[in-house]
Length: 73
Image (cartoon, rainbow, N blue to C red; front, top):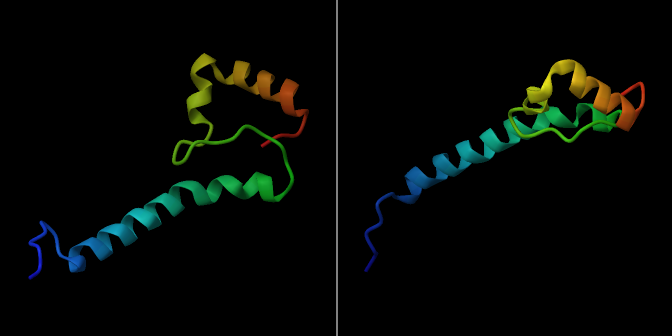
């Protein structure tokens, strides 16, 4: 006999597909500069480097310029 599960495979398949596509959407755009060979800080999924601006835009920009050089992305 089959075990009664709270969700059928008909429900789990679209849910897993949606989660997979959401993860790909959150990470995909962050490889742009890396593909071009431009160094830079590693971005977080969905947020990018936005969370690094807590100390201020100028401070983050200066730190990255010191670490990665004049051209970074």
